[in-house]
Image 1 (tube, helix red, strand yellow):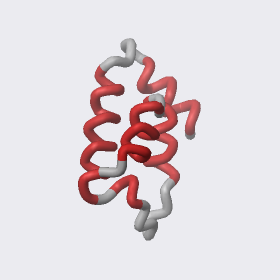
Image 2: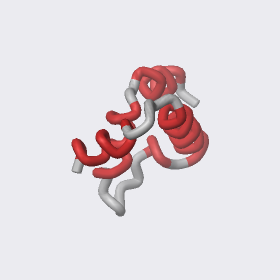
Image 3: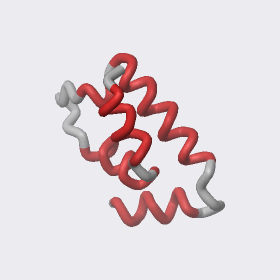
Length: 65
């Protein structure tokens, strides 16, 4: 995985990751969601989700729409 992409993922907040995930076009071949990068993105997002305070996940989801 490219170090630049890994750094970009690491800097993203859970909200930024969820927004990226939620609004990516279905037909998008976005390299952020496939292969090794996609696996890292998903793992990183799950780890950040686990660190949220109770109720924060719902608030973020509602904010994003």
